[in-house]
Amino acid sequence: MLRELFQYRELVWALALKELRIRYKRSSLGFLWALLNPLLMMLILTAVFSTVMRIPVKNYAVFLISALLPWTFFSQALTYSAESIVGNGELLKKVAVPKAVFPVAAVISNSINFALSLIPLVLILALLRFPFHLTWMLMPVPFVALVLFTMGCGFLFAAANVYYRDVSHIVQLLLSAWFYLSPVIYSLDFVPARFQPFFKLNPMFYLLEGFRGLIYYGAVPSWHLVAASLLLGGIALLIGLVIFARYQDSFVFYV
Amino acid sequence: MFESQCLEPSIAFENVEHRYRVILERRDTIREAFVHWFKQGSHYKEFTVLRDFNLTIFPGETVGIVGRNGSGKSTLLKLMAGIFRPAGGTLRVRGHVASLIELGAGFHPELTGRENIELNGLLLGLSKREIAQREDSIIEFAELGDFMDVPVKQYSSGMYMRLGFSIAVEVDPDILLVDEILAVGDAYFREKCLARISGFRERGKTIVMVSHDTALIEQLCDRVLWIDAGGIAADGPPRDVVRQYLQAAASPNPASLVSR
Image (cartoon, rainbow over all chains, first blue to last red; front, side, top):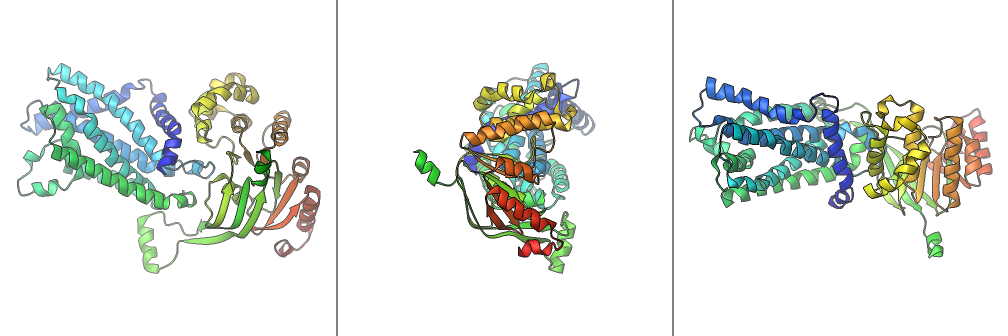
């Protein structure tokens, strides 16, 4: 399956670019939406949580966006990849093409979107005169872990969605619950000590913490954290791949 | 070199079994799955479309397939194309396959004809470089003029088919699978397509085509298979097989088709 994917890498790339092109083609602002979306989201959340809820965090906007951007990537990439097999069902019945190209393309197109969303992040930091830490350069490390994890979940839900169409609804529900249970709008320090162990069971805790450390605290992540997040990503990908590979031959009967 | 290629079949089915799942009562939701789980019923029915199916096609053969609707013709083609995996037996296909099972299957309506050439070519297994080399001849063959830069959702079905055919034949496959696709398109383009298919034949490529147009089959093929109820009812020279098939089809008792 991996060899097939490599063989069709040009197709994967073309599909990813196509998805982006289609997403922004008919809108007059075009690619600006990729920048505006996280910006608006951040403005709203910052207003609510630093002004209304008064979360006592300095530079809350930066604190928030440093975890919000990777979260948004995760949630969008998962939504797109979960739909990717069912959405391309007609095609799968007519063309012999490795099925894995679709969820992978969905994750790649959202990775490009993530890279674009770093532009407003830079703007906000510049505007707030927040220092750019050298640790930014390490961003690929938590990102790789996050991509692996997202890809694994994407394979899993894409396969499940073929058999049970409820999966796309469940994914949405899961994502909104997951958002509040993950340290995006808050950090682990806000959680009462006796609940903290439960919050540490959440893979997203490790995956998002790396980003916040690099951008907000300017700290090099501990090797514990790096190892934990890469391991979680690897395990998720392995599970997703095995299940996807196991069922992919019968997708064509159900899509 | 040439001799060994001749001996080695392009397509070989050995005791192939294929089951087709038909979802009877769709378990589209988890609630239904739950209900079913308690009822202990199976949610799909498997039809065995092919059983102990044997067929060998050699390079350079042009094979036509005739048969009634639902007899397994398209399934056969989809197995050759790799869209279905056989449930049992072995199926070997040698060489690059291009399937004209449905033209323009991967077209995205919002993209222009030109943009779709690249996407479709990649879907058919070409590399970007190969597509770039072929782009001009694809555009030339399709004869769509300014429509190349219009989103394909604004194409007529004939234009859609023209572009799809042009891309698929430019893949320049070793094995060409054709499923009843020449029905659309005007007489002029149809002739062009037929000429292109004949060209394939002359260059020693393998062609397998499914059609209800028995005259066309007789004209193009040098071997015809009559498929019935998932088995080969007849295999031989076009004229003979087509005659048998038409005679059986004209007989008042359709059951005789199954029992030959």
